[in-house]
Image 1 (cartoon, helix red, strand yellow):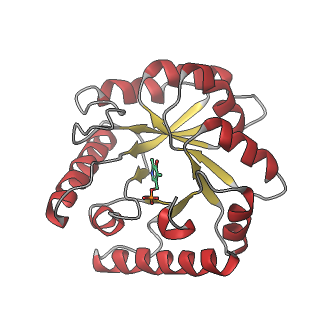
Image 2: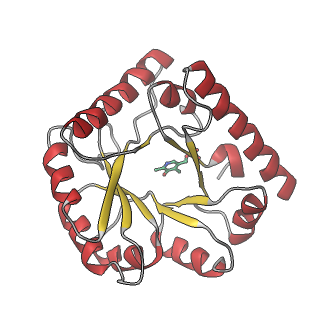
Length: 227
Ligand SMILES: *Cc1c(COP(=O)(O)O)cnc(C)c1O
């Protein structure tokens, strides 16, 4: 398992750098979030041994158990899955980042429940750029209002946007959807929000996302194997 994960990580890093080069972007302008959902602590340990420190999780209880089992390692944990109101306390207490903010109520609870001894929770707003079937994510029309409200919460730091577009048939279509997300991101920056993170691109659409300005790709399958 260890060499499998280490080899995959090195291949993914090479692909990210190649995509950056092809897009005329600095090779380290895109960071890699390793999505470890459904994989146990040993897989995360193997990835950490190969130099990976940021991990993404979808299922809150599974993640909290894993975070507890890996307390001895200096890891950064990102919540990328849907969050129900009754799970906000666990998220506020155990994660460093949340990518999946899609309503103000959840953001307010996270801010209220973020423990004093921890730094502000780093958050992205999930935007539903293509009106896709996942249905989670705020609509582009509601994004500016939500972004201003989230940015004003004391215990959150708004870092940017996250998208999970539906798979498209062609590279051109995929890039068009990613470009919409990038445009929304730049609009918010134009309104004075100091955003630096566009969480966009997974195993299948990493190249297209990087070409259109992603700053963080979330990769599971290409690192850990098929779930
Ligand atoms: C599972 C998941 C990923 C990783 O997807 P892969 O296709 O395995 O790379 C990325 N982002 C989110 C939100 C996910 O749920």
